[in-house]
Length: 112
Image 1 (cartoon, rainbow, N blue to C red):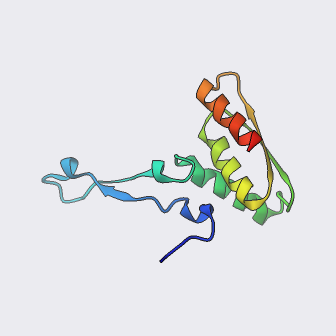
Image 2: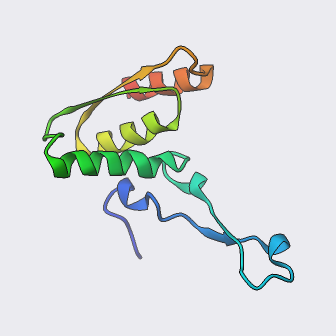
Image 3: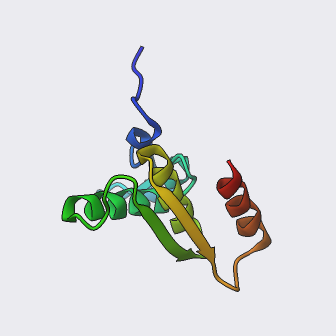
């Protein structure tokens, strides 16, 4: 059985779906990438992972470091997901316009 070593290996490996209704009679085929199948539920998982990988590579983020991000959306979730797996502390500061759903989710992330 194939398995992944950690959840980060699932980021970006989302299904590609052929959009049949739009493809009728067209030579170029139209596909959609199902980014909601990422572990955090959005394409911002990719951004969070790559921001952290870039910060590690450049030496701006060192082992045991802390990531601070002002967020009102999925970028914070993507960063928090990657930070948790890689052992970084993540502080997500919600903006004033954050939805109640985001406030609730962020609270759960903080206390997990």
